[in-house]
Image 1 (spheres, rainbow, N blue to C red):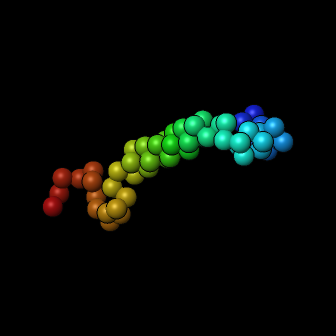
Image 2: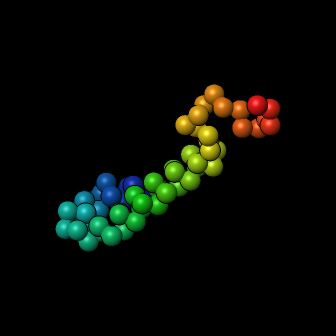
Image 3: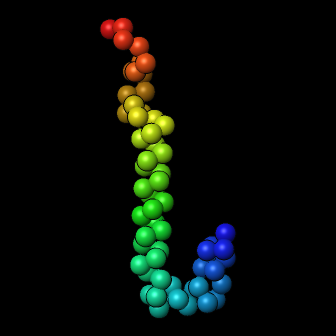
Length: 59
């Protein structure tokens, strides 16, 4: 929440427009996307085949 409030503050807006925090923002976006994909692939490893029963060995 401190990061969000900083980016919404005038100082954060000035730094963002000047490009001082671009590397940090790119890393944050990459980290969030990485965590999102990791969560999806961990919790729903078979989400592209929703009707497949992966926990049974019956054919």
